[in-house]
Image 1 (spheres, helix red, strand yellow):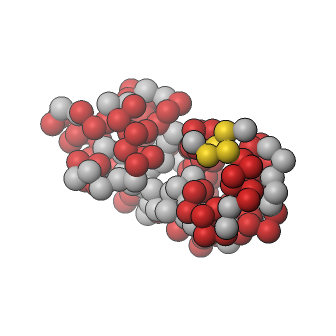
Image 2 (cartoon, helix red, strand yellow):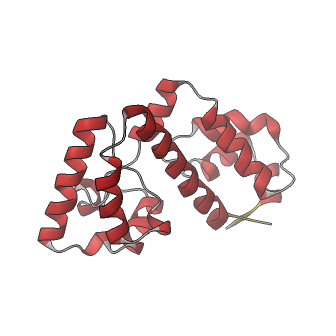
Length: 169
């Protein structure tokens, strides 16, 4: 854990490196809020990062969405996820799926990607394994625009929890 005071005083590169995993593989988010320092509290920091994403171009938003891994996908099985994603998926037991469960997740991931062109995103820490499967079914009925909005909402939830884990004081 790093203190907010340390983040506020950190050189630009350290600030960006510390916060680069809050939004998956998206260092551009902390880079764009550098000049807003010092942040008076964690809530202001979270809001600044969230607004940066919300104000990004449509292409940047899609790039952010596409930066996320599939749930229980090939990268997870290969141990190639970020530390944050590994912990989040493990919390649901997605790292310990039986073969038939893995196949079910693989099929749902494939159907979702085929329809929307990006991975299914859900805040794993705020649901259950069955909740994920139910959400797959429900969200496959969404339009492209609805699903982009839902994916960004879930990404903000993930980012909020990651920031709470990382930054104290």
